[in-house]
Amino acid sequence: MPSPLTRRDALRLGLGLGLGTVALTSSVTAPAHADVSGPKAATGSFASRYRGGQETVWEVLYPPGFTPGDRLPVMITLHGKGGNHTTPEGLRFLEHAETLRAEGLRPFACVGVDGGDTWWHDRADGTDSAAMVAYELAPILSGLGLDLTRPALYGLSMGGMGAVWLASRLGPNRLSSLTIASTPFPATWDRFSGSYDSPADFAVHDIRRHWASLRGLPIRVDIGDQDPFLQENLALRPLADPQPEFHVSPGGHDWDFWGRVALEQMRFISRHLD
Image (tube, rainbow, N blue to C red; front, side, top):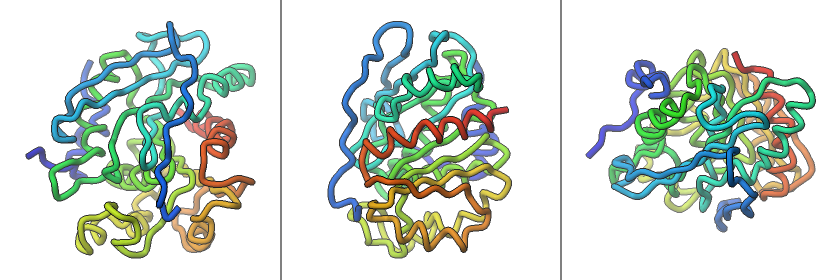
């Protein structure tokens, strides 16, 4: 059984990225596919030992003027429940990257990967999608020539919980920024079916408990005014230390909201790249 991602390992690996060369009763369905054929994308898959040997698909979208092999900083996305590697497409990355270029902001590549409905932390059955990102996806991205010195980390819904957890394992010096959208902050281990194995598992992975470890990291939080998780996000806001850049915008828990607010999120990410 693979060992879980530990803080010591994360620091040693730098997210492994320094390796050489609503009550969620319904799933977050994959977005409609954009045209990512040709030189704008690199895709592939691998059998992940951290996901029980499952074939794990990844995708890298490149901004205008760049192609696979170019060295660029990276935004890594963690999808929501029922989602997959196409998250960059749902965020309308290629469209928004055109706007960033027109505004003279620093370009970056956007990465999506299949994590399954594992809630992005180590589980009792031996799966650990956070470790998959660090130990398996990272060398692939490095092999493409991408700059993984201090990547940006993004998560939506379930993936927002995973992004906070993974960022807490890495520490603020290993990332350029953290952005989360429509993220639940559950107070009990059994609020969402399958999210935690036990009360003890929840105690270890409770993202509210780990928030303080993010001090020094630029953080942006987005939530829709019709999102079922709005109130718990509002409740977190006055208590959070460190304080994030916090935004409530019109919208719900869906791709219309996430794709729309992604432009401002990508501006935030670009401004905080090294």
